[in-house]
Length: 508
Image (cartoon, rainbow, N blue to C red; front, side):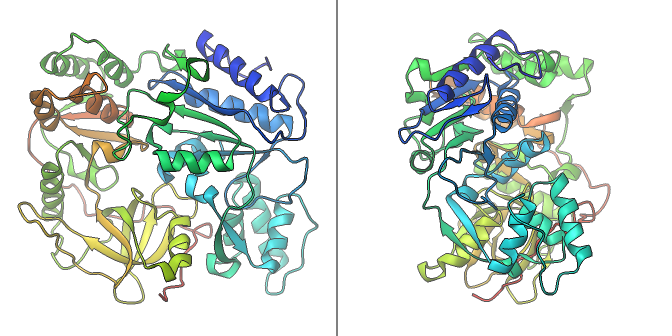
């Protein structure tokens, strides 16, 4: 086994060895950092599964480092470089912008599945800059770009391996250098997929067409995708292809949030006992808070997690009321969740453009203000590498006890949004926030139904997913009350500057 830079637990070391053996079978020898030409058949699919804190992300990061050291080219989704017959490639993917950004914060160059399925078409003039930044060409001379601008692009790329971000640092906009998007035609080589519990069968099939060797990282205790009644895609893999991490990694020892999540595995634990456990922990550790009300200040950046849709709608309307939001407009700083793109077939290029910018279903967005034309919005896409876009928007504000949502404004077609101050636990999968509020009365209601999913009480699966969304602090809210805001909604804390690309092409 190639010597890792960290000390693995026994199960991590065993999984590393199994993956190393699979890669050796497809011509990648991590022991000696030797590469052979890719085999057409590939290594198939293997999964590394384990609950939160078991070390999946650490293992993924160490495998990435080993493959990069062996000479594989990392495909980021915005630039692939020159194709060679003997080229070996690696792409690290996640289903959502937020999940990909969590990996990028750990130094792993992850991108979304969509950005691998669809690749940008660059203007030839700017393609020369991209090749130079990627180390595949000479420093170019480009009309309209100064040497200082190229220096800024180069400096940005050294710290953040994003071609669009580097070009934006040179003063360019996305519409300057990306002329369109196309479905990937050429297969890649090795694919790592984080948060694989969120994959549905269609995404899984698409990925298998692109990657002859696919390694999935997933949590079997999470909720299966809504449109995958058969369970998670890795459930059907044979035992040798399912590598289970069962021990909490030592770096996570003493984390009360993970301790609570793992306590849910006790089959004798009831809801009331679990709540008493949370209350006891909150008296000893401020990372767990026994909340008597929903803290409205937190809702603008991390939604309250609920089970019932009616609860979600009530909390959203309470949030808008305490901030004095008018019925016919959004306030800058209000959170939204993308619910998809509504565009006809003839505007397929525009759809791909919006999705590639991060406006995929489930994306978390902050409203920045109106666009230049009626129905357009300026938006900050949480977790996207180039987060600021301007897009035709259809915003829906759902009202309690009303079947039809209220639409404060809308373009004829474009990206559709729901309000994001609260969201269902199911939709929160794949995301993580520093502070997470879980609305406990909803989980109590789920417990009273007596429903089960995959052999476990539904309330326990909901609680597990909700709790593990918190990276720093968990708020267990036990009463149906909302605090008053300590300040108005804000947008000045959102990243801005030359690395942000604004989608200016508002013509549809």
